[in-house]
Image (cartoon, rainbow, N blue to C red; front, side, top):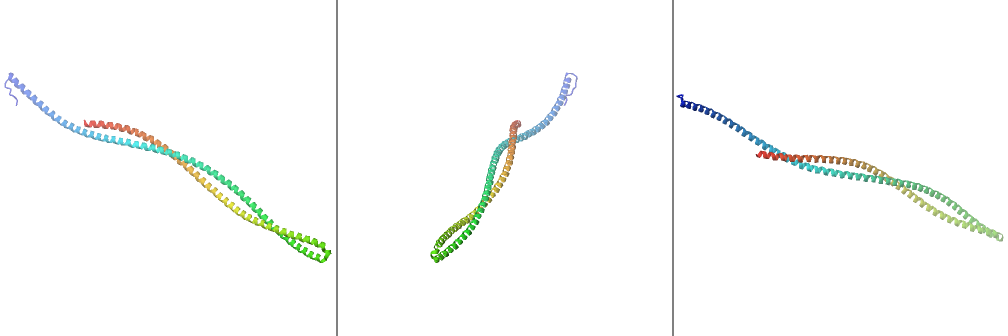
Length: 308
């Protein structure tokens, strides 16, 4: 309560001043209480905000840590991918070299097959000439066989004539003997004619035997010629078949060579793409390593800030 002011003297003035000071203190206390309440409310809000900020910082720190771990894993993955890409590039390069070597080998094989086919064709030509020569010999032997048969007929005729002459000479000798001394000269002539006829007949038999031997030899020669002709024809057909096989082999090798060249070109393109991929993966790897380092730095800073 206020102090009553009963006089205007010094005590009254002191009482009035005390009352004014009391009112002033009362207002000041009310203001202080109001400010204290406002400060308490602000402190609660600040505490809540600080708590939310701490939770957000923790979440950010956790996210940054996960990002950092992911960046490290990405770096490891890109390193592995880089090694794989380099391995693929090296393997495809070697495969391209092998394909080129195979292509060169097939070209050499093509050249060998072509030379072999040329040799076979030359053999076919020679065998054709042999076949033609064999046919000529066969024809000549057949002509000789015909001539031998004619000779046999002539010899047979001579032998018959010699036989008849011998018979006539024998009859003439008989008649000369009957004539006695007058027929002696005729008997000598008849004897000589008989001897000549016997010699002619003997020679005819020898000639006939020789002709028969010649005919047998020519028959064997004809058979051998027929066998040789058949063998030459069979050999010629076999060589022609071999030439056809060489042609098929040559065609197959040429197709194979073309396919190998196409494969080699494709492998070279793959190798070039692998090298390009390796370069790009290496670039990604460097970027990933840099990003991982920076992310780890950010993660460490965030954790320090969250801890404080």
